[in-house]
Length: 88
Image 1 (cartoon, rainbow, N blue to C red):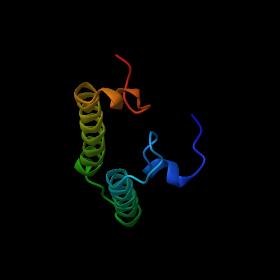
Image 2 (cartoon, rainbow, N blue to C red):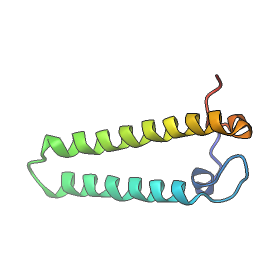
Image 3 (cartoon, helix red, strand yellow):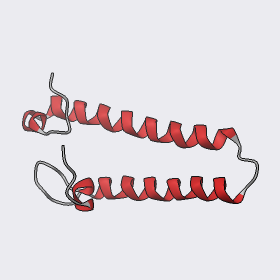
């Protein structure tokens, strides 16, 4: 899969329209990554909990998103053809 632009990250692949939820997730990722890098650069002692919280939050978000996508595909038949949902 080739990413042609930043717009591809925040648009629905099925319709091509911008996705508000994807835009919010991308914004949260950029902000949290900036904060993690900022704290790492400006402080001498970095709490390990910061990195664990960062990783845990993004793993949890990813898994929740995947779970909801699978659930949506089961409830609405035409959503199952989306490239975001795994084939069953």
